Length: 606
Image (cartoon, rainbow, N blue to C red):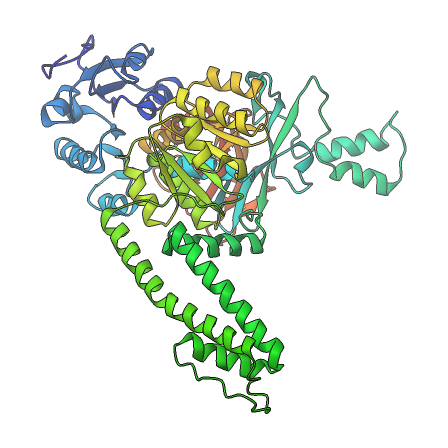
């Protein structure tokens, strides 16, 4: 359709609606969030109704209209009735295009809520100052920590105050857990999972005591009874499946890489950065010759200090000829000592042109913008397939943690290649067979393969090719389709699946509704939102207590922050009847639908 009007005209003029601009996976998930969980009218502005996710968006129930414009122009904004809309989400296009569209929307409707996707987070923070009621979010930044943590086999965490929330499973659940967040976990049928189940409440300990000492109950010692009350939830039967619980840590889970491995990787990586393979052979040969000659000098005269002094002078080209027969420990006058000094001197002469060649090569490769390929010493690294927005974020996060990482990209024009190369990370750029690319990325010596390209089929191909070479390698996949992901879970072992749009869309939807989400936690393919809600005038929270806020299967209150002590979080706040006062805030864990219902309740209370 051309830019002439509505793609699917509404029955009557639209008002108080929400606009989603984009036809990508994030737009698809965001529209689902809004129509299924928040139940608000949505108008979607897509660049092409026949491509990407636009056809599936058009088939969603609850979408008021789908409009096709190649870009978010002034005419397009008028077509989607931006002047009467309550909010607009810009989740497609470049940062510059989204900024221009956001300012245009604000010009048409000064009070509209604006949420725009920005890859450059620093620029996004500055743009927020120009918007009266806007938020800039990064979908890749929201999702990347989940992929990086999955690659390292450590729990994904969200920071709240001075603690980090994470999800533990079954035997890893400690006695100081906050609450059970999922049960009936079955990898063969992930549809059985229950999120935030109405399981053991605060009175569970007293119920157990009644069972221990009440009528008909077995009589045990006080020690045994105390152990029973402090135990984690009873181990579920095989039919019930596994259990997941929310726990807190004082610090973020550490990366378990021995220091000597990190040091070795840094040294080898530095050497690879400054030298090519041929230059490394020359340097290593010369260095070995110098060390051998020094050892020979030390052996012949037995004086370490003099041997070191003479070797350094010879290496610098300031050699003094040996005087025969001195007998004072300053030399032996023997033939072997002279040979050793000659070797050191000539090796020293070799180092000067080699150092010059290294500098020339580094400067020349920098001008040509060439990337470095992984060297023979690359070990215990993570291979990241796909250097788009998400892949670039994952590489940067792993590199920042000190984890060896190698990037793999088939498109030489991909935007992430230059960013990864600036970090000094080796990159394999080739459009040949994927198996050959993985071999060049030294898959046999890797710890994990993270496939985060924008295509599900390519990511699955990377996983299967990796397993064909190394059946035990850990695989982390980016998959959009839930059914596809369920089959992968049921078929492959040691595999983790995440969806970027599934992780990011709830945060975008909550931001569009004026709620701040601190982060997301993954329970397999399901998502829990961690949000902090301030009790301020106009929020609808003042006067509510834990009973009013909590919703089994939807919302669980984790902590309360009181106005009189704003820096202190009271985890599992015991007083469930205390009402919130101005200045208080609550931290909640919520499902997508639970947070939507809570938002509706609070809106009605305002």
